[in-house]
Amino acid sequence: MVLSDQAFMRYNRQIMLPEIGEHGQLLLGKAQVLLVGAGGLGSAAALYLAGAGVGNIIIADDDEVDSSNLQRQVIYRDIHQGQRKAQVAAEQLKALNPHIRVRAVQARLADQRLAMEVAIADVVLDCSDNLETRHAVNRACLEANKVLISGAAIRWQGQLMAFDFRHGHGPCYHCLFPWQPESPQEPQNCSNAGIAGPVVGMMGMLEALEAIKLITGAGEVAFGALQQFDGLTLGWHRFNLAQDTQCPVCGTGE
Amino acid sequence: MTVTTSVIQVQVNGKPVECPEGQNLTALLTTLDTPLQATAVALNDDIVARSDWNGTLLNTGDRIALFQAIAGG
Image (cartoon, rainbow over all chains, first blue to last red):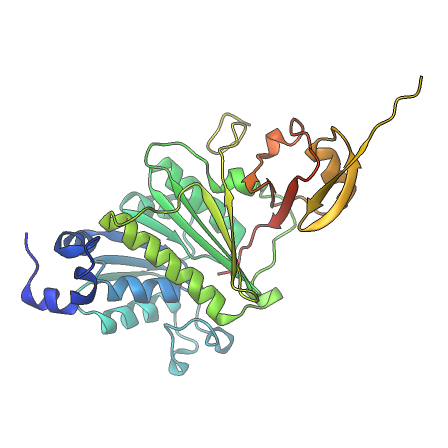
């Protein structure tokens, strides 16, 4: 298979990169990426993936566009208030790049539906806004042997992690942040603690970057690390992850 | 005979903290009076799995970082 002249022109600036080239562009065109969440992370990640020519994008969210989203969820416009996020996001992505396929899932992915969507994806981007979904996505990716790229942001802080479950083992998100569903403590999120728009956007863009690298084989995806970003100082801190042998999700724990 | 326990200094999120020599990570975290649910702990930039907290003994100059899971997106 070769690229059409039209595709060659459209994606020329990244085809020029020797790490991508025509071969990488073809791989992007064949790839299927699942975005769980179409908020601040998903907005940024999805726009860059669509621009890059990722051939199949599935974007899932159960929410509707609110005026308080527009400060950071850059895929939406003022007129979209009150409309369904997944649907609007899919339309915006198609408007940016009509040569790709985009499917909207107007739901909070969980259980069977989550498992099914993960099973047919090549890579999963966690762009969600709650810990329950984060743990469910982690488990589903581990069970389906899929790569999970996870971003998160609050206030001026961002976190980026990537988990390689292709060989069926951890470390996983649960090793890092153990959590019991009965816990009353939901950590802080954008609505109760605030968020600087560019910080969440940057985390979403980095999720897209890692996905593009994974699909094309460019460079190295930062597996096995949690990278923490401080928007007030522009400082990064990298922490190394190891599997918790007692982890109830990916280890032998109960 | 008196047994003297020497005190060592470690850093917790960049701030100096004193603790007895040979103290494990669990004991130190207990003294900090901080919520540990959905919290990760790193020792000298390596995340320490929860099941290894008891067996991780602190040495002088260790850098401990505590950070909470961020859910926002």
